[in-house]
Length: 322
Image (tube, rainbow, N blue to C red; front, side, top):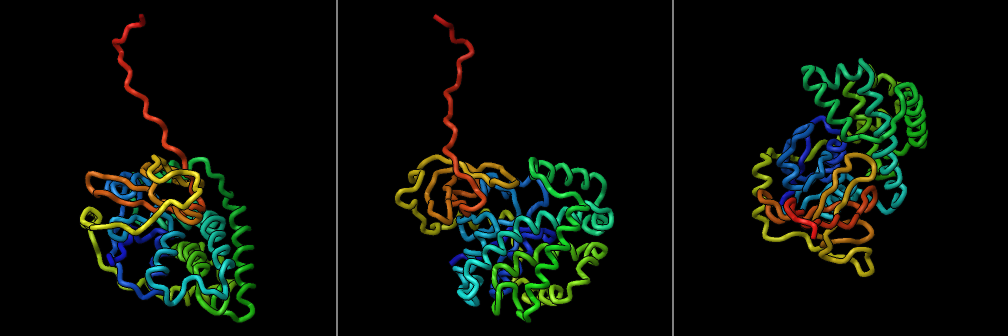
């Protein structure tokens, strides 16, 4: 089996979630550092336009969205389980809340305050800060987020709920074993702790902080640096891709030209031929001059599939009306 290649950058919260999962599994993996913002030509060559970070590569299979990536990692290395039977369902619901409501409260709350931004963007020149703001404004266009004042109140409620969840002495959020819930929640605390003045709000929650240190104790496994050019070579040279199929009765037929896009943010459509579709996953086949033939995988939750727009024939500007 080809080795896991994680395309990420060091300060990405969702990347930290996946890095910790790789650490919990004790896996070796290859590390490709991607640009923080557009342009991302090597990323687009592999994903077809999906620009969110991270994404994961195994040969010529490209996995988008951290929720799906964690599922795939758990299939590759089932022990210890990321989805223990004792917390089945509950852990995934907590993780989905953490990836959405908690994340989009904690991260803007940190970066929108001068004390937080001074740490998160320490040493960045003004031109970078402007470009970064413009990039993220385009990425999150149409999203409505709480004000700093509202976010602070909401976070205090969230931290209090998590603290009470740990009141019974459990070591992990969903029970006696670590689960996807722990890693999804930890990424937002990890981001806040990058700005110590903002992280001070966590001080009243000792059980939550002790739990967070346990999660961080998993580390990141064993990464090895890899260039983005080498990752493209891996995809182009892959002899095969993961077996996928379009389920009977699916809304789209195998081979249909479709596009898929996120429904929350970063809604850049990716177009291709449909080769896999079931209740959990959709897979598009794409041909790229640099990456070769790749299969790009997305989860069903949080993404929308559409039939590709028909291509109109070119018009003849010299045509005469009879």
